[in-house]
Length: 324
Image (cartoon, rainbow, N blue to C red; front, side):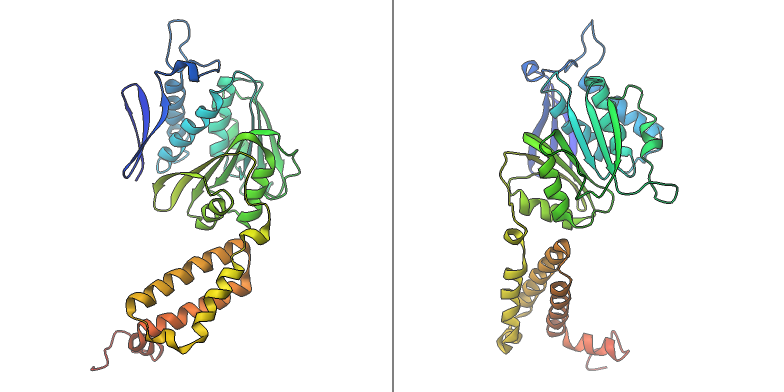
């Protein structure tokens, strides 16, 4: 599980055996914004005070203590971007329905430069939609320029290459991850940043890796991670290029031959896990027919792994051995 530590005048992110500096308070020249890295006698605002203050407000406003660490990491990663310039910053958030990340982003951006712009995209509005954006954004004391757009996450109709930072909020359900990731790519400027917060949506993180193979990962826990991409203008550009269909079809061919049934239990387990990977990829690309065939093949592999147990379960005698 990831954690953030402060030592040697640096904020560190620790994830298993990796240590990475988030913000180095000694490198004042890295900060070109209006907010000093550390407090001075003339300015009480600082990166540390802003992030700690947001953590306090996050809990006081009842946003949930279980994900407070997630947003602390997101605040540091957003501050990394904001401190690079004193000019107004343009940010787009895809998936702003719950409004929590919007609150954090708006609070930071307003402190750095109130002329910055935050455009939050929601895929539903109205009393029955579950949209909490306006409720949460109302708590921001010094907001930047704000707008809320009701649109599909994969077709926002916003101007391309017009945002310094694009964030994908995977704490809300994201359908068709490929198209949403490509929409983020369309919106971000060259040398801009894409931040993707993924919570229990492996198809979203898998697809972002497929499109941006150099994505940097901050793993918070087994189902939660943050991915960062510094966009160079290069990625997979064609759905067919990243499609798993050809590779999956070739893998299915081996199960047409009876020889695979002689595989050891370890080999069968590897077959099962590989099929699980293809199932996730097919779901991410919306390939329903391929997904169904993979699931059926996976069930066949499971039958080969545990023939007696599977047979007993089907006849209602689950848990009995052959000698019972």
